[in-house]
Image (cartoon, rainbow, N blue to C red; front, side):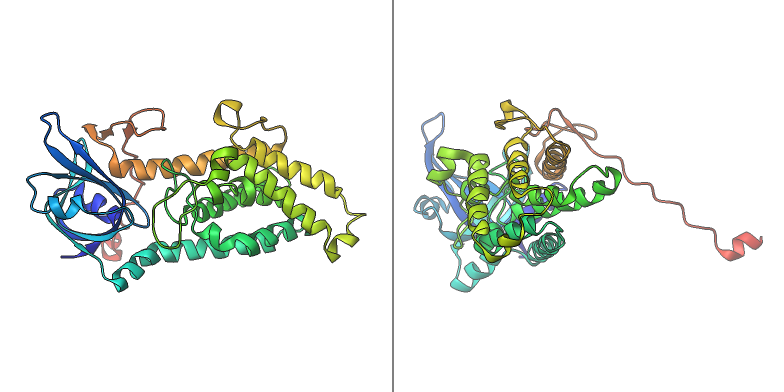
Length: 353
């Protein structure tokens, strides 16, 4: 059977049941009982980009094997996959086995397409940071990447709603930088250097909230992330890096720079603190500068476009071209209008006739 990612299996299963196999890590395993008090096992399975829930009933041939599975075990599930109206991606007539060490290593690397896309995104981020004209913001961003780059590349954009996968924060950040560069010529009042730095640091605290280990896809919980939240952590991180930077040799030449260094620091902190837009969404302060407002909208736009893309893969059909709501999007999903395809030009012989 063909080896599929969970995303591929989900996409293909929307057209009907398919046969295949998936390599996954056990993210959670819970012993449960039905209403009739019959035991079953509920497994949450994850790969580099997606998750599925597998319910193993007590009369399934693999029940004993699955009942003994532990969190962080690596397994192959092989059988028939279907898109269940209630449970999402599901499997029938399946078997399970442990992965070999080589298979685990390949799984942890992620599928080639995802690795290639994230490599392009990472290279773009490095390129955009190098293009920052303000030496203070550029050095600050480079110091952050040098110290925390590897952790950044293993961090998810969120736990559930958008870019919830290893490296998802890289994808989200790079796309936000592209959006910032696209709108900056349309709004000349925007300080692009500051906006790019704000994009890089706005979710930097998620390196503690949403970090994934080198050895798996289970997003644990970090005490710093729980106690402070990613906005507070991001602001603290900028202040710490800024103090180190001011003690460096280049800082001795910055006294005459405009804007003043302290103003640059405060405005960058404001971007981090206000990027959720409103207090009800976790921001301690609302956006009060053009760059802060732009960052809030850019962040929301990219997150919601990702939510739509992911939602179409899992939402239940409720009518022709209409799918059930996927939170936190505000309503039912409607399949998008196809892009216009110009009709083929008539052949030269037809024109002569």
